[in-house]
Image (tube, rainbow, N blue to C red; front, side):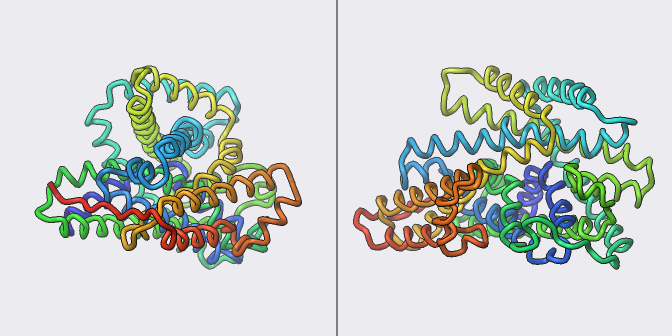
Length: 441
């Protein structure tokens, strides 16, 4: 049981590990300054805790989230939510981000002068290769991804340990921006950028398929193994995030870089690698990060195209793969900082909905819940999340004032208490549903 859980956990660690897992922790470390520990605590809670819990809950029901959401809320909502989710972890955010991260962390530091043309040429050949492989994904790519990603993660651990030894005694810079007043809440929101909780909804299907191949003698063994998988993934990512964040928090970053729009995480990874291992190490870093991001890109193109073929079968797999590759290529060329910037509002809507869905599934396993109550819960969370973004983006003071009156708004969680109230109403209102009990076939 422990062996099965560890093997599955290692596989899922490799699937999850991508661009966002690399660049956001050191960025947080650099910007949070002396408020690093509350900031990284919020980041780990949303980037690891919620993601792993989402994965576990999804894996506990082999029918997956699409069935849970359709039954508890409505089929149309399940389709709408999952389309938005797959587009986020696919062509609009994650796919282009993997390409630009590979370029900015690995390739750009090797060039005498990085330019828009060099980014265009790199992403052009990068996406051609990804597209060709996605048309016929083979076991070779899967094996490369399983082997390469853990190896790269191990090298990052070595970098973090050596970096902590070399720079750990230095004093961090003062906190900047929102980290000055709300370090935990800002770190919590930054954890959204990893996309891992959203990816957990999709990857829970992969986890179920992988675990079914291992075979289980009883439901008890299956459930126990799932929790072992969760512990393995949680410990691995928590250690990685804290280490990368600590490196970013103590690595000496010039004032002009801190003041610029340059991604601080990219700077820390590249410069720390060269400072610790020598300038030639950048070539090795370029190869490793490009290959790791590349396998993630192909996997995302394949999984997103397969979801859309299953949901909207009118267009074939090749059409979807072509479309998503072209969208990813186009968005990749606006640059990493721009991709992160425009993705934030969408993630701040999708994440609260995802968390609320997971909470409903958990409580429903313990108690029967009213379908009307569950619908009201998701409706209120969605309304608050959308209103928060509209108020922030369009500077609507009246909307912002109402949102700030809600409990935990200062910690970037204005939807939390309404979600809890909705769940309590679901316990009391009529028309209750019991969670379905599955058995090992």
